[in-house]
Amino acid sequence: MWTIPALLFLVGFFHRAAPGVMARDLMQTFDVTSAGIGSLAATYFYAYAALMIPAGLLLDAFGVRIVLGIGGAIMGGGALLMGAAAGPTLLFAGRFLVGLGAAATFIGTLKIAAAWFPPTRFGYLAALSATVGMLGALLSTLPLATLVATIGWRRALGGVGILTLALAALCGLVVRDRPSGVAAPRAPTLRVVLAGALEVLRNPHTWPPFLAFFCLYSAAGNLMLWIVPCLRDVYALDARPAASCAMATSLALLVAGPFTGWLSDRVLGRRKAVYAVLSSLQVVLWTVFVLTLGALSVAGLYALLFAMGLAGASFVLVWPIGREVNPPHLDGVAVAVVNFGGFLGAALTQGPLGALLDAQWAGALVDGVRRYPVQAYRTGFAVCAALVAGAALLSLLMHETRGLNIHAELRGSPPGPRIGTEPV
Image 1 (cartoon, rainbow, N blue to C red):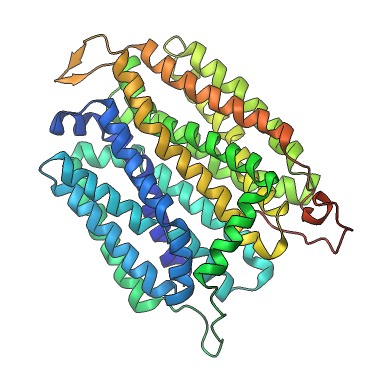
Image 2 (image 1 turned 45 degrees about the vertical axis):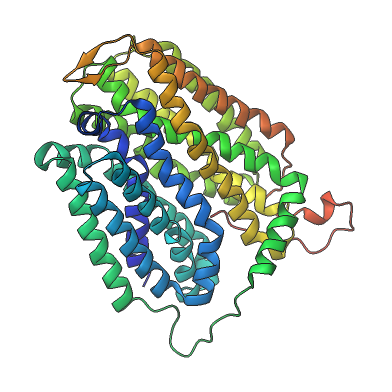
């Protein structure tokens, strides 16, 4: 029951970074610049962010089996449309459909976990679901580069589309929303959801984790998008060696994400302190990355990217921090609002950063595709480093929750029973 929705989430996560590996092929085929590639990548996040809250309502109203089955079919159709696109319009339309179809995959996977497993297993399954997403990010590096080099980018996307359609069909045939005999929970109305979202947004303590995730995911999303083109242009690596080096960050996050949640929950009992240390370390590592770009050896760069992935696990703490400074009955809405900040950041920054690369293009071409100088990438990644610095500074505005709900204390109300939570 859990595996099929989780695999659909894996495919959705795979698509987030895929344009970076295919950037040169797309530039050659459609004669677009980095601004075009950035806008194409951002189209996914615009669609995903726009449907994030409606997706939760649809899942509550119609169930995971139907919504993820239809969503998977839309995502698969979008990949097929991208692979068959004769021009940029259809390419962008396919990318938009992929984002729409992927919007419900993570929430749907968590709903299945909540319905089919004991409550004491939910935190573990949430972390496991997020780890599956990281596996999707890994597949969008070296495995995708190898596939593209073997059969071409069109057939690669076509194959992913067919696989996604098969998973969508399996979801419709096999997955059940809950065990037999278990009554469906009462679904909240749109009015209730919107009222809860407005209450969360009115809470000033929501905004530090919201903006922190905006900054962190903007930087991470742009790193995933531009690191392979950077390695090809600056280090003269072919697609597969470049993608192999780009795997370092995702490999680190596979381990660091769950470990950071465990350390915060079970060992230290701290949220803000762990976040502040990791985000500050990220600033240092990003600064070193920008200053040494082009001078550091490939092996040294791999080690640095791996270290950036380890420190980058700070993002897993913004969800529980946002959850624990809001009313307990709005914990799901609070997580959704904070999560929205990250996707909004990726959507708003990828196109402009591509335009920034174009602005510093020196006129060099390789096989008819623009080759950008090291200074262009340094400037672009310096923007990412500034965003990470902003995320670290926002820790000064966060409250230490110790893994407990402190909403009543922040409002000045007498403390009520504190509710322990698990990060998702």
